[in-house]
Image (cartoon, rainbow, N blue to C red; front, side):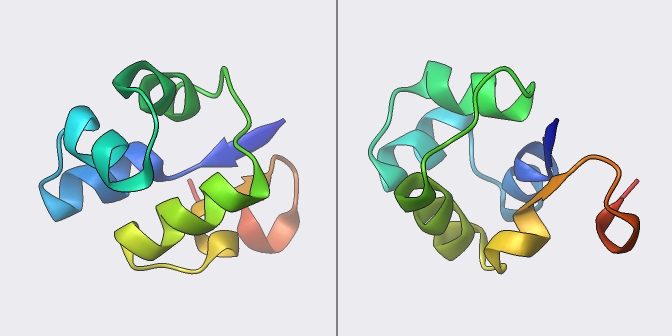
Length: 72
C-alpha cells in the first residue's frame, strides 16, 4: 500500500486542500483521496506535490513496510 505525508505537510505549510489542489492542478477531492490513501497519484502529480510541499518525493510517498521509510 502506498503511504504518504501529504496531509501533515499541507497543514505544516498552512495550505487548505483547495489551495494545494489549485497549485498542482487537480480537484480538491483528489487531494482528499490522496491523503486518505484512496488514490495513488501519477509520477507527474507526485513531483508537483513534492515541489509545493518542499520535500523529495520519497519523503512524501513510500510503500508500506519499507523499513527505512515507515514514517509513523
